[in-house]
Image (tube, rainbow, N blue to C red; front, side, top):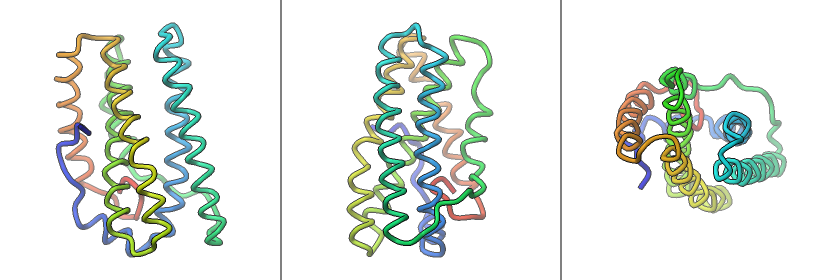
Length: 191
């Protein structure tokens, strides 16, 4: 369903346990960046009506999630602040080809893989965290992340035949698995 070719290692949950506050702050940034990605896709491919409508919905949901995480931080007296991002998104973005229509396909598939990894990580947080509020919160986000992943993959098929899209998705998913295995030294949603 999620097109991922690997599962998160126990190393990531150990990072979460060591610095949950930083993961929560990073999560807010991830929601904001996800809204920005969808907005950029909307501007880039505005002539594709289905993409424009779907991106509008994703932007709305991601900003709603951003506000939910901000509320969560406020309830916990955690100050929202800038934090250096993980290298995950930058490494994935480097895989995007530069010529259309492959660029559109890659942009959509990379966004979809990020959503899939978020979905997997939120599921892990739901099952791992002893804090009931946080466990329920991450459980509540699982479905929308999975839906966003599916939407991005479906929209990529507007630019190339499905067989080509699925083949490229497998290539990108293999690269994503290598990137996630490398990890990052600091606790982040995608470290």
